[in-house]
Image (tube, rainbow, N blue to C red):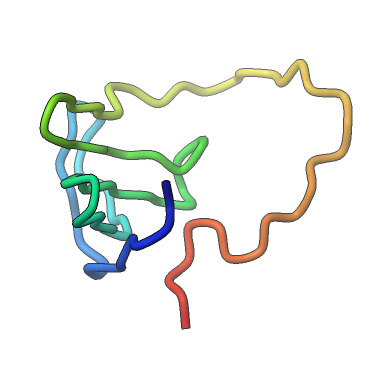
Length: 82
């Protein structure tokens, strides 16, 4: 799904959770756009395509994870390619 995705640029996107600075990616093959931010849990702020729209509605505080293993580093996740 990530093949052929290009970085459009850094921009502020407004969703129900507020205005968030994010990296905008576009997939011409899938006719979709996604906005990602390392400041948001799971990085996804907004994603839209022909038949769908997903937007961050709210961010919470005080949640605890049920994951007991140490997370793996995912270098470059949410960062522009060079």
